[in-house]
Length: 424
Image (tube, rainbow, N blue to C red):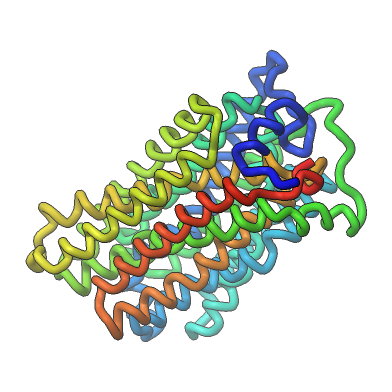
């Protein structure tokens, strides 16, 4: 017997739907402390993972890189996340959120503080790999905290708040880092980002705790098998990975595109990226509220995929008609494209935890997020190479095709679905 993701959603609303005890219905204001602290920790890592994209010209000049080279350098961060995300998730299910996030943020802080002592792009890439590897701890751990403390009906909005910290952190970084880098150099950028991670670690250590009487945690390697056999989770992960392609196309290379291709100043291009990231935060909240209202995460995911494909096709057309150094038409289209390409994350992340096997919410969310970061590691390299060989129109069309493929995969997922034994 097979179940669709929508049917799993209905089933999970009748039972413990996170794989961990949910205390969202308890009258506790502390859930908002957890949400705020987890969101700030997520925002601090986003400032690193996505904020560096705002200084790609400085990175190219400092390390002598091409467009594809700087894409590879930034992609290394995602590779580090990918390598450690699932182990961090498993560890979170076993020991809880606070020790995992504190250890990871301190490790990322140390790797960033070491950057000024490097001289080559290879050494910088190695430290960025470590930064991503340590920073990955925040993703699954902060998501599990929100999933644990909030009820299902309000979880879409709560996770939307948590996910909004990613574009907000990136937007703050996009606004601050180019000026900081131009005035004080790349080393000051690294030290500033390291300090942000340190503050995040101290905040988590002071505020995050698990609900009293939480269910027993996962123990032993055998506990991973239900997650790895969960067909619905694997298909959701693949669909999410495809949606990352348009997200990272604009998130990582937007400044490069506007600066090199359209002759826009770095400051103006970074401002467009900042506006897009800020707007994306509102988009994630709206998507979460939408999913709570209709009682489905899958339907909004499908719709967003189709809309993203249409928008990136429109951007490809506009690229041919917009003259250099003109942002009047192109900038709004890029902002809308960025919002659509990023507003879906919370929906997929929440759904992964909601259909997780018992006591495996963080591992399930990490598996889904691993697909995202695999795509995030590959997309800057692929998009940079396509831009160099075929032009930016081909890049935007490729991003739109990936979004359309995700929507088609989710439609099929509703028909095929996951094994019920894997769902619960």
